[in-house]
Image (cartoon, rainbow, N blue to C red):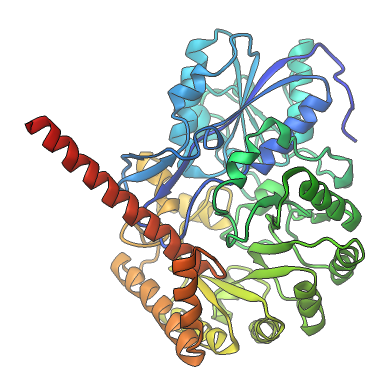
Length: 540
């Protein structure tokens, strides 16, 4: 149970979301989305009486995209630069919290922390999020500007840390926290049992999610996000992110979820989720919800109750599951109910079409069941996507061919989209720890950005049997086979692609990717025209 009021003196706390970095040559559409994790932390701190300042770098400069150099080539940075973020810090800020979800953000997070420390003497810098949970010992070794890292689910831990700092109480031994003072400048072994569980271990997970205050969206520039195209799911109008669950009960070896959430899977009540959706419709005029859950649908009774409430309450929106889910309960009955209540897009996450690889990566998936579910989803009118990973260190080319066959069969079943990504080891995952111990992962400035390079020419192989060029060729070839099969087996789909491309409408992830690439081409053309005009002006 989270306390309603601060038990000690209130603190001035700044919470920062760093700018978004993306590889321009990526096969994925990209752009900023509302930071739901930071909004939950803000709500808890404010609810306890603390003064909270939000600096949402992409939200506060959402139209600004500039090129920045990196070891893997030019990246697109969306939002305020680190120096601008620090300029906005109130001078009486006592604690700075920075959300750190992805490894490639670390150089930017590091710069923000160092600049902030230089500006405000005595400032306490706390970093939390998925990557901080697994990466904290390297962070302490890399800079002296980070004082604490929150490990795992962050609301209660951050609240307790602030209370102890304000009351002058010791932080040593606190669960869910890594401290520079306690663990030294080089930290300790971050691996623990499965990465990221060294230090004080993970804090106890929330078991009643309905007790956590809703995200403090009033502190964020929500309208700026709503006025732009949705970059999380397919753009179906004004969209808000939503969490109905936390955690995942599975232990896939490529995933960092077990080190962040353990394997405890907790759901909110369907009533609370529906009420939150209704409030967003009233407050923001939204027409779509994107569920950001790690594994949104596991329990059939929860899904049925949620859909029944949407129907009885007359909630007229669309909703999507863009982050990948499972098929255990996605049978013909449930999929029909999903469509009837506004669900339009679902992403399935088999990750491989090889039974041997599924066993290797501990992906508990039944491929025949998934193919049946894809057919039922298509018949119900849902737009589907499947995610595949290639190049795992244990993978053989025969496994890759099995994944290709699965994509071919999925396309014939009516699947609309596919994502084929080249394996990249994430801190906190079992695969990362294994590769690190074998010396195949070298933690340096180059490595920070490799997770961005899961597609295209910047990719890197971690498989002794597969060259980088071979994986890139396989990636593009598998996508070509999938989309050729999908459109040749249903040629009328091509008319929809052209219609959506020129109307600006999106139905599939392919529509979104094409829209994004067209915007990039137009922007690059505009930049060249401006450069030519400037050159003419200079000559005259």
